[in-house]
Image (tube, rainbow, N blue to C red):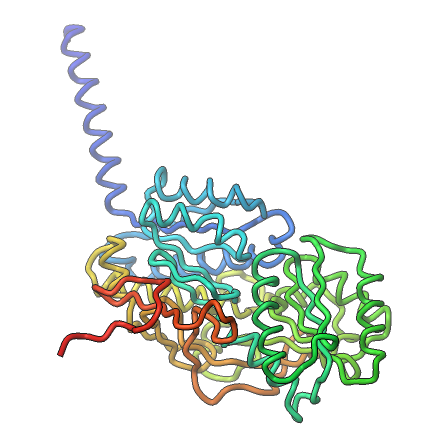
Length: 427
């Protein structure tokens, strides 16, 4: 064979290899996983990465999606908020993922939001947040304030919840706690709570020296009125916070703490015997009894190969979001973002919470609200829950600047920051 022919054969082989690689890529649907696997938020987010991998594995075992294999592309933004944006851009532009499941903190979500809107990507965000946002490129599968924060405070104000009169709003210093506490402060004042009966405090991510702050809570509660703590502390700072509560003898019967970012996963690393009676507000607890939840827990244990590993609310949110996304893709017959987005509206999933959860045109779910009480084994006993699923409010009715704002992305009405009047279809 002449050297010229050899060159031609090699060139043809290269072309065929490139074609085969391209064909193989087209037979694979990529799903991005954007969760911190290191740093202060790894305690909460690593499990969410595993949840998406579990859902991808289950989907592939049942034939994939649109006849194609689904591949998870995992990145680690390492609890570094600017790095979240870099990794999001990498997933969308380099890896060409069809969708991304990710973020925990609102600061990480705010970091990636411009990237998803610029590149028309699709993000499923699985954690409770402060509201005050509506994006055409994000589906919010966690709770809005009216699905967690407001009901939790209403419960503590009730006779059943102890009739709290004074309030400590204790949070990590970033967007979610500050905005949530702004809403809660306005809500409390609307209920007649005086300014001097509300104490607000913030500490940095990863804060560990809680002695002074917990002592300040005890001092505030010494005024004689029943005091409750509303905790928006995030990440691994929760571990020393709860340890210091126990060290200073704070009992739930005296000063109950209701947490919005502490679930079964966070408690798995804490000795909970001194925390019994403190509360958490979520939309799901592992202790819920129903066949869907039993199957969810069984699936998790089988995938993770460890029956001691717990489930929690953000995991359920990813479970719901992933199932809704696959249903929308199948309905649209494509992973094209615009087509999938329109197919998402009205998607329903029988959730492990026991409720049928629905995706609304404001890109938020209708979800139940549950109050759980910490038990010695690190699980929660549900002490209160709504009878029906509650539709999320993207904008708070308790903030004057939100008056009249609506979030409705129904085609062709696409507006996340609109004011009344709301869209009315033609007769």
